[in-house]
Image (cartoon, rainbow, N blue to C red; front, side):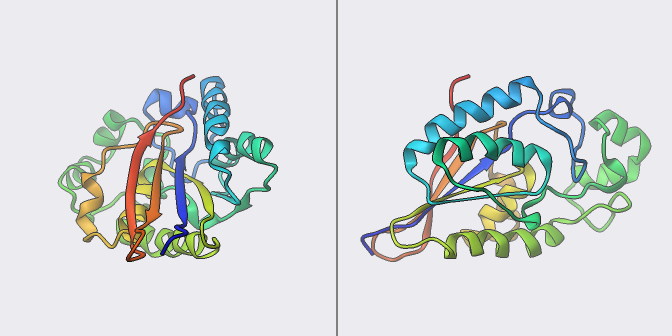
Length: 207
């Protein structure tokens, strides 16, 4: 395989809730001033990769992160709701301290990695894996030989998706450090065998 496909996975820029340490989940929070600057800086660097497709979650923070990239490349981002962040249910908008105070048992289970007890309305990792891995796989499969595509998504969900694409055991996604806002990673096909490799992780543009 000489013409490798590359999938770049980009976390959205910062929001006020990121800055305050509040769980966003499916809440439709927009980028803050720094988040817009991060998105613009990332777009300048990522446009140099000459992507042929851009996909993004339907949440505002992902769409706003994709917008400068669209401007830099002339591509129209394709909106994919399955690329959303975890739905954190009743925990939405809470800091860790507020989560611990409001749902002490669920908080303890979360710290222990036990998803048999979750906050009402929250997705489990299995739920997220079932939607985001096929969505990211479809993005990769849509690329032609030698092409690069960019997926704009969310911090916790992207780790699950990447681990799934790399065929890692379910628990291994927790070994990946959290991505910075507007950090990106690159998945590329192995030159000889075609399987995906994690080529870089948490690259960031200067802002």
